[in-house]
Length: 369
Length: 259
Picture 1: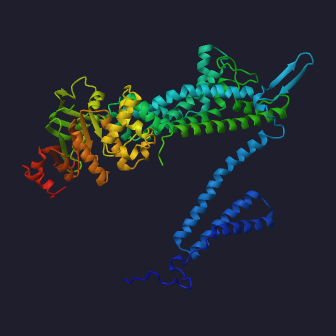
Picture 2 (picture 1 turned 90 degrees about the vertical axis):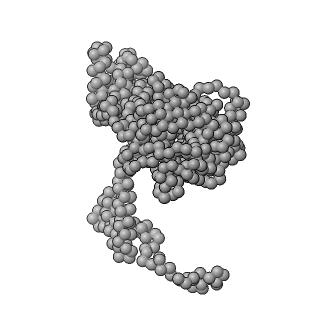
Picture 3 (picture 1 turned 90 degrees about the horizontal axis):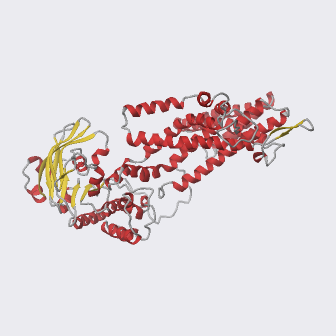
């Protein structure tokens, strides 16, 4: 081997082509390919008649073809496959995003449309019959449903979270991994995860009908229905989070002569807290939008009712459903308030998510850089 | 305070698998005893039976007697939690509590056992424990930062500080220096020399020079083959083990002919 690098040698006057960079496409090749395929597809559709969906789909196919062919000619097979697969992955991602974005845009556009009233969320809606003038006046408002949603979901959370997290603690900390008890609990939780929400609603409704009698509609029975749906989600996610806590930490604690109870409450739970909160949030987001079980167990109403133990109670998803399906005499108003309820629900979930993220960040173990 | 450990004919099982068979050993107070032997020979398993830490692994069980100052650790009605308060342990991998600051980590043993401690006593305990583990100078300005932000060697010394902060009678160390640089190792070996005045120390090590440097007595463990139980082959003064061992296997091991 000969030493070619001579210190202080004058820099070469002419840039010599690096042998290692030969046979490569220019840096922004993929951008040009994308623009090219959009133009080709656009020209094609300008001839046949324009359609946005068709334009994008054809552009995507043309793009994959261009990238695959040119790359395999200029570069090598490995790079061609790499560019092709990367293209497919990005396209699939956009495909998955499309319905989400479309729903969100629709909800925002229609919910906050021209008839939007900033006090919509804080006004009790419904129809009022005036016996003097014999006229029905309809007010548009969602306050009764906002309160109902918060009460019903709140009760369901208060009941489900302790049951779910304590079950997870039993599974991870106390039960032996393959004991009959552990396997039975895990199996039942799996079965519960698959229960259709309508069945949970029927269960709660029939349970309260047996206890109270006919017409046993109440916010509380709806909350019980939601518990059936929520507990398995909380158990599953909490179990995974507790399993992530390293065994080392438990051993370190035991070796200091700390009891099992204190080890769990002061070492294991604080270490897993941000994951536990995230799991609970996912469970809440899952049940807050439930319609069928609440519709069955709490019925629907336009009246303001903050007592979860008596009478029908309204929630935002049920309001959206009934507003569309059973509109009042003012059909346009009912439909508008249905969209408004949908938008409020989305906003509520976003707010709860933000709160959970902040809480999780505050409690997260520090110093893990 | 320091206590004598006496082990009579101890068998350790993982479910039905016999991991360590027929160990009898006497460990005197105020001595350092080193356990050496090839990997998988049951040194760590045996060490963990001395403070009932092996019970943390599901399915592990023990037959035989472990007496600490005459009290049987495995007698009926013995609370493993109380045993572990007297017999502390330092692990191979540093495991500071990630949710706690350096200061809280040192005080964890005291605080989590619900002991009340005044702020000045706590400050003294933190300082003496961290000095004892040769970590004070490095962390005294950032006691309230998280322990997981320290380097690996510092984290291990933090764990030693945490273990000695509860003032155990016996200190078990499971390869405490295997992740440390020579300077931290030296610091810990000096620390072991100091701690010997007050504690009974048992240390598992793969480093035979370390065994000769720190220990008074050495126990050599070996297995006949994989799947067979580990045995205590020879237990004697460290000097005897490393110069004139009685058993051929010990001589082969310490002279580097195998292992």
